[in-house]
Length: 288
Length: 163
Image (tube, rainbow over all chains, first blue to last red; front, side):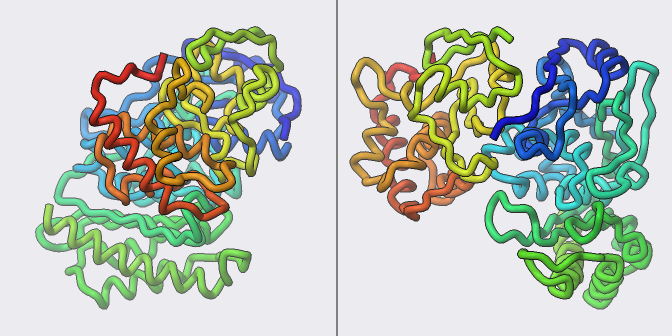
């Protein structure tokens, strides 16, 4: 398959890239390309200009500073898989990263690119909702920081403007014992998830301090199960509580029946995965 | 756009449309047809090549993205008529049947044993989980990669295949 014609630009600084995005007609940012290039090939997307940011140095860092984990725009999925620091301190990210696509795709695909692509079956969106991440959006005019909650709008639709780059992902560093899980039902490696749930728990004096729950592939965007989160906060962990949270999370899911399963089955799996994810996350936090 | 890509150790230049996929540059511009096109949708791994030593799906990369970088295809495995250990291992362990997935499987296997000198069954299965063998010959593919790892460990003086 051959993409439609476009003009190709390869800036070597972020400023140059932002200048191009601000002046070109219908530009699109190309990073890892693992979602965008398939869309170009299928001609679901046909931008006039591609701005390839892969040669911009200094945007592939993973670092924790000032109580925040910062992921640059060019951090590849496999960098997250192999980061010891993420493995030790950000359990939901560490659980999700090796389940994204397949090992070859993970060599190129980027976290920020996946978020900007905003496929409701994408994994990072649910993870970022669960951990309460914020995204730095930069344009030639300046930058703004939006929460994951405010970022996702609809299927393949975010608040990102055509002249903006998702320049950095910021995740609050844990301030107590944390646990996390990413439970994903998939027919085979590399397939889109049938259903997945991201669960993040921070303990506070033996009780659940903060819980975050994000859902994958059960709506027109990644969903945050806010009501389920609120029944968990401040509570003594236990199976009844987890089951209640699971039911509430399933209550906001609006999956569709397709080749991967019926809506009823998917909704049920949300309940099961949130319940199991909470048990796993709490166990992990207690062991931490 | 003019690009220069070091393919199997040799600098190759081309004047390509930006929309040209790397796999077509390799197969059609350079005539290296060992890299196969299977699904053309980033699923099967038949088109896998090494980009600076790292496995990538060449159907999901623009040729211009490889400009100035180094690519290894299956043709680059053998050196001076000598098969690479991964090729010897696939032959000895019957790691191929129809052969369609084999270039991708061998390149992924080679990249794996560069960084993991004694991969377990699970390590190999994990590494090749982005490659599909429609003959379902996975058992012998796993054995072949492990066999190559052992051969590689026994010949530490072997010249690096990456130019």
